[in-house]
Length: 162
Image (cartoon, rainbow, N blue to C red; front, side, top):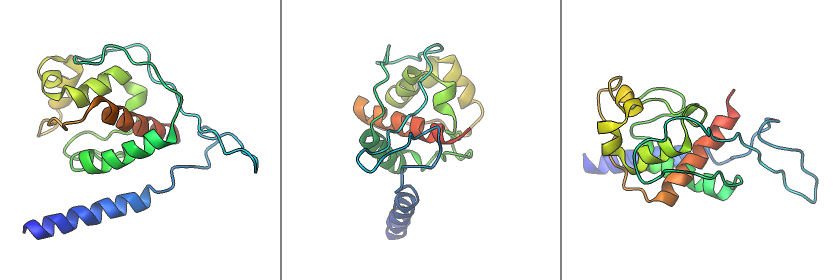
């Protein structure tokens, strides 16, 4: 049974990587035109500046310029750490993450990833989510840069959707 689970996990990861291997889209919202000499600049939406910041180590967040390498690393981490419970477009064990960077502040999202247990004990927004799903999110053991990478991947994905 353990070998089957390992093979299944490898298959899921390989499929997800294959499906997400092309981070560029044709959307005019996410890219500006490029010339033969200059690569296209990816433009993504701004993070929310107002709203609940959550409880945890991140009290403020300065939005960096979009970095495709950071988003790509976040995609890999999302596949390994998050897809067991989350899908981007539909609920699974946890809520769908589509649009999360347009609904929540980056501080709240980062604090949820970095300080999961306390957020689900004390944060009103996290408690409201907890009531809608059968199991509670567990700590992923991420460091702050890994959480920022996942956040940037989610922001890139949210730019692709209207």
